[in-house]
Image 1: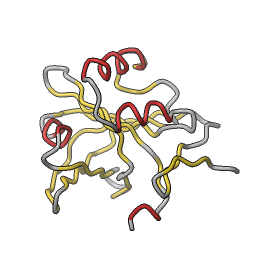
Image 2: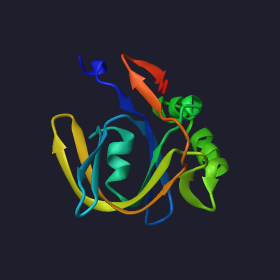
Image 3: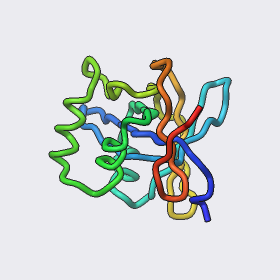
Image 4: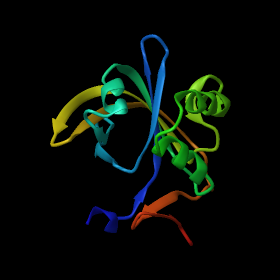
Length: 150
């Protein structure tokens, strides 16, 4: 039922006070407010990321470009944690959790978290943003990746 709504694809990287990073692919991302600038994403509340994200003090929401399917798959499926960390380390731009070549990267701090059903909603405040103009987004529709034709 929900697969009939086309979405962009993000990789969200959270960093805790010890510098440990947790990342996952999410299509459940949306704007909440322009003033203050707030966005929301949701994850399974009892899943690994749902638990770890509660400890994070910084988030970077990377909006993926159409050539980032492999990144989406890497962080969207269960895989070895060391493989994910190595991938994160190699893709970081100047030590920040911003993925090289991302369409956009929103640097955020926690605002509020709310459990709703089997998910946790993370509302975060955007503190900075970086954009790569001229790139096209990676889209997800009906359980498949899609491309913007225009």
